[in-house]
Amino acid sequence: MSTLTKKITVECLDCDQKIQLSFEPVLGQIVTCPHCEAEFEVIALNPVELDWAFFDLDDEDEDEDLERDDDDDED
Image 1 (cartoon, helix red, strand yellow):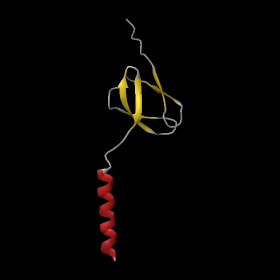
Image 2: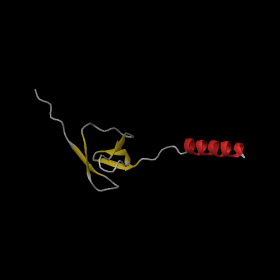
Image 3: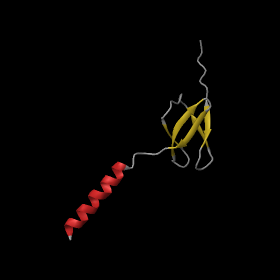
Image 4: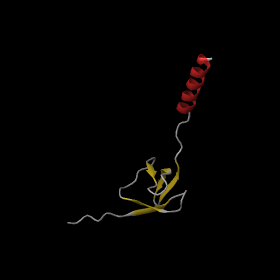
């Protein structure tokens, strides 16, 4: 018995190139475009649909605040 892997192709929202998925995507999964390295989140499965991936910016804001505090200490 042979298993037929269905190839799924989606279009990059940034560079419009085709992204070929070699795996069965799941909701919330992050997909990176091999052409421009933009990151997307799987938001629908049938058909597969991508949207821009948004990450929690609170951690970055905290890091920036810490860096600013360190700079203030040097003065």
